[in-house]
Structures are given as structure tokens and as C-alpha cells.
Amino acid sequence: MNKSALYKLSYGVYVVTSWKDGKATGCTANSAMQITSSPATVAVSVNHDNYTNECISESGVFAVSILGEHCDPLVIGNFGFKSGRNSDKFADYAPLIKNMLPVVPQASAYIVCRVVDKMETSTHTVFLGEVTDCDILNDDPPMTYAYYHDVIKGRSPKNAPTYQGD
Amino acid sequence: MNKSALYKLSYGVYVVTSWKDGKATGCTANSAMQITSSPATVAVSVNHDNYTNECISESGVFAVSILGEHCDPLVIGNFGFKSGRNSDKFADYAPLIKNMLPVVPQASAYIVCRVVDKMETSTHTVFLGEVTDCDILNDDPPMTYAYYHDVIKGRSPKNAPTYQGD
Image (cartoon, rainbow over all chains, first blue to last red; front, side, top):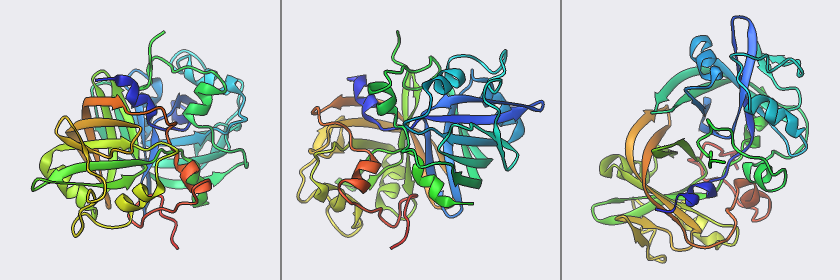
């Protein structure tokens, strides 16, 4: 088994956000996909260790901020390489509020969902969300994970399914 | 709600395959993502109406053939725009057999899985598979759905979550 085959799956670069105790938080993610078209539903996969998982489980809502190729890479680091448990991820990026969910203002599009189902795995929860709001914010092409890796030379946080070690 | 925001999610182009009654079949899909890294698991979303859904449900196994940018677009059409219920999708493409699963020989990588969980939605089943085999077949860069749409000028089959109508 050559596990590098798994890195041939294609992804985007997203920030999955939610709320807890009136505080907005979120984490960088590459695992999001549309599941059904009518009603529109989207699945996201979030590591159990991520504070965002706890926030989505409790609030029952999440948003996906879709980052574009020209998004400041610092945004990815801000949401990807520290925990919302002991830091305010939105300290430097006042969220747009869309349907009561925080959206990263540098995103090129966003999708707001309410959780309608979930599937547990050993390390991640797959949340299925029905889309309650979505819109395009600018015409920057969506950043793919390959672009992030090859052009921006970014890496995966340790909690990502695609983490490859140091 | 501007549903075109959903088209900003990034995907690859895959053929999800399985078996039934000793016959290999499969369908073109763009909804596949890795969920956990250890053990490695992958989720795929397959429409209830697709014969492949029935085959995966019964056999408990599936493979994901990852198509590269230089894959013949006829492969996508062959697996995407007819049903395995009344046609032999592998008639023109003798499958590679990997861990007893059929793999599209034109793929640039493949992942073989056994189903460990599933989540039902109104129109699609999300199958969670533990990876039992995977490898890279050639160094063609993975085809993204955006590349298929923008460069190959391809469209979505009607059963895809990203179907946009005619």
C-alpha cells in the first residue's frame, strides 16, 4: 500500500467556523464537499481535537469560508496552526456575520449550514449540514489544496486527515 | 441565497467502482475525501439512483480511480453518462484488479476500501471506507473538477450533487 496515492485526491482550502459562548471560532480545513443538491447539503470533516468540533456539536450550525488563490496565507495559518480554545481566532479578522454565523472576511465565497446529521469516526466527525445561506464575495478563483501546497508552499496542520508528518 | 457559491467548492474527478454478480461496474464522481489518516479512511458520496450505490451496499467494498488531467475524456463519459444497470461499463476498458476491486486502467492512482460506515441522505449515500490498498499508477497531475469544467468543457451527470441543469 502506497499511501501517497491518497494525496492525489483534490481538495479546496476552507475555514470552517462556528460559535460557542458568544465567541466566534474556526479552523482551516480541506475536507468539504456537497452531498445533495435539493435540498443543498454539504459535509465537512472536523478532528475531534479541534475546538471547532465542540462548537459545531453544541451550536448545531457551521459555516464554510471558501478561500481564494489570492487570500493572504496568514489567514490560513491564523485559523490552522493555533487552537480556538485558548486564542481568539477572529482577533485580527472581524467576521462577517451571515445568517448568524461568522464568515472570514477574506473568503471568496461562503456557505452557512445547520447540522442535520453526523457520522463519527475514530478521529474526525463528518457533519452533514443543510445550506441555509450562501453567496460569492469576490471573483478570486478558489484555492485548491494543491495550489496551497505547490504555489504557497503551505503544509497541513497536525489534525488534518492529509497531515504528512514533519 | 446564491447557490452558485456551492460551485466554489473544489473537487477531483474520480470513477467509483464496485462489483455485483461477478460484474465490475462504476460511476464518475467528484465527491470523495479522506476523513482519517490512521487508519486511513475515505468518504465517497453516491446517488441512490446509481447502480454503483446498490453494488457497494451489497458487496461492502469500493475503489476510487483518480483520473489525471490527460485521461481520455471518453472515460469520464463512459462511466458518467450511462447506467451500469443495463450496460457493461468495462466493455471497452478491461479493469485492473486491485485487492479484488476493479480499477480504471487510465487512472493515475487508485484507492481500494471496505465500507466501515455509511450516512444516508435524501438522495445520496455517503460511504465511509477503510483503505485496504492504494497506489499511484502514473505521474499525470490529478484532474480537478474545475479543470474538467473549464479546460475539457465537461458537464455534470444528472445524479451529481453539482448538477446545474441543462
